Image: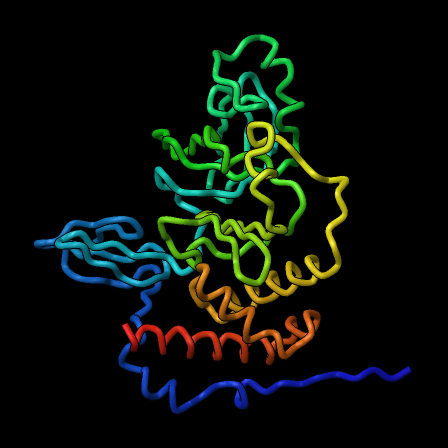
Length: 300
């Protein structure tokens, strides 16, 4: 039995001229234990500690200076939440008047019963009946979109879904990337021109789903699901292609936002969706997308 194997050499994929030209622009990466600068006149921030009157890196990453505050931003890390962040999360446990959810952060996050919409968007105080029906609202394993409302002292995030754009997610695909690759913007809910909707969670969880009509949006206070509805094959192919495009951009360490994803989708149309998982095609899509984004920056 014989099989065909594709072998790609890294030597053939790398544009050495571009690499040589951008050598001076590449950021300096510090390793743990490496001295950043003398402590005198500076304050240490996240990712640093003081030793022998020097500020030393405690994580591998890029140095950041804000006035006299010196910190090191790690290359890979868990999600560190900020108030107002949009996140995609998975329910882990149902407790007393609260849900415990996974937001890809160091500690599990909390969603209080008082922080969710009631079915139908009804506005009233939560009662004992609501507490008994919590599993009917959200059960273990359910995916939700939410916003960070508060951060407790120990680092636990408190979420809320008191808007009809947040709530339970139904049919779609969850893609996980490094949180640092998701660009912080005012809008993280996007209806792309290709015919699908994406939620770019600041925590590195990205949700891709069919675009809903205006009548379907909001549903019953964010709890409506359409699991029995059949998604057409054409829409499933668009979603699968988008998923592979996002993985290609993440592989190339490109920032993820609506424009970069749409450009990557357009560049991927010359390939079949299943071909987008091949490494040399991933790098091709990444290079083409980066070139188009660079052209926009030059025009601006």
